Image 1 (cartoon, helix red, strand yellow):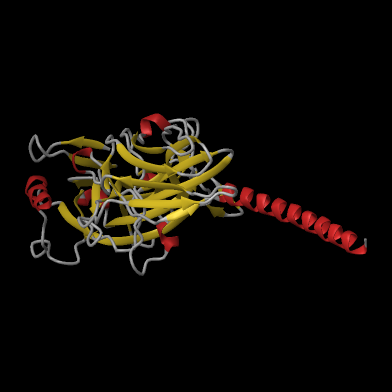
Image 2 (cartoon, rainbow, N blue to C red; image 1 turned 120 degrees about the vertical axis):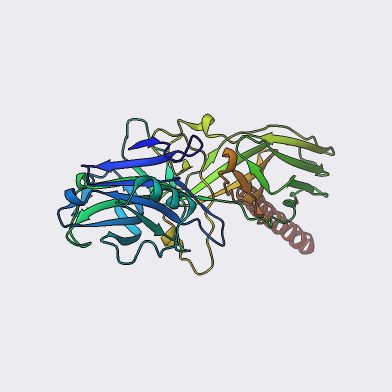
Length: 397
């Protein structure tokens, strides 16, 4: 693959050539999903009729979910699944190319490349996922779990002919997500916890300033605690967690903050989190946005499941959450803010779109409370039995 400018200094056109038979020209490799619409894939195929020798030229757009290397095969089943594929016959043309509607890039390329250049055009269906992959170990080159998009051009007698890899032109592209415009109010959740042997509760509130954040932009989490109980809050731990749902659960904390609140005290403080891929290069299984060769990427966009689309079609489901955890006298209390991140590739800024689901996690607290309750009931039963025995003894005398 070669990249050079044929439209002027401001436009870099990607050029792929194979055996002097066909060449693919495209104006960009990132195509944006605007939620209600997706940028179409457009380009130009340059052919050499003498080299084709009567064969036809085709271009395909495919979306593939794969896990592991290309050479992995178990019981005849490869770790690869075609989510979507569309094939177009470009040469000989099925319609007059003068009658087709061309994009600006295609129009300039056709005038530049001459009569042997033919346009191609694809539209993404609504149910396709965005480009995403899981971070693998440095030694596992070519063995990764990812949803990938590819434009391929090949020459054959028919579109059903089996084409070898070295007999085709392949160009990886990416489908990226833009944040919706209507974001709603800033997220806020609160919860109250009662403790055994304490007359008053512990109240906690966590909130964010807004719903949209960009990569490299700090996420400020405001935590308010009113501790009217007789327990001391020993630690406050705040973390950003990523959840990638394929065949594993990836629970990765990017940053933590620690604080404490004594019994009868109050706290109102803003903690700053900065989730960056640069700080997590060694973590295996972290979901990343689709990566093109020799280009860096960022933390993966959260999956937006559109109405009527099956989750299984998306391949890898990604979501994020902010967790506020209180350690109270040996007990653990959690207040969780769930949020989805949606990335915007304009000017390399990827916003995080926050959706709140109020939820309270207190598994350790509940377990300990049940233990305390069981012990208390057991002690009360013993005391009641002793009291009954004492009353019976008094009555007998």
